[in-house]
Image (cartoon, helix red, strand yellow):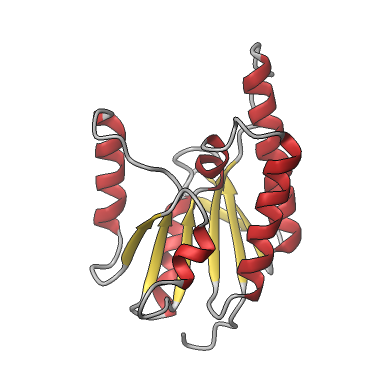
Length: 177
């Protein structure tokens, strides 16, 4: 892993198409050839636009990387991989949240905090990508406001736990911590 501390946690946030995934890929490339790309979204083949989006993302990753679709217990699924990963790129926090909106706010926050704790204790470095969704107008729909608020709280929790936090805007990154 070329000197990257195990359990290191990096958080990259920013708006859509800001360069977050490119920065995460750049960081994770240095972690060896057993990097796992942890997808928090289960692809629906009927969604042609999302299939195309996922295909583009896959083409950007090194050939030897493994993709793990694990919208459930992500860390357990990663821990069961053989050989174990040399690093994990989790993309993305907001898709993870979207798959849990039927749960209570408290349950979602507790689940994410447990996940962060497990990543901090993992024998590999992890980079987590998330979307900044609270910079626009206040949504008119209560469920959309709830999603926006939860995404913000999860991002704050992630940044607090992270060794590094980066903000990407217009293809440029700013190290926040």
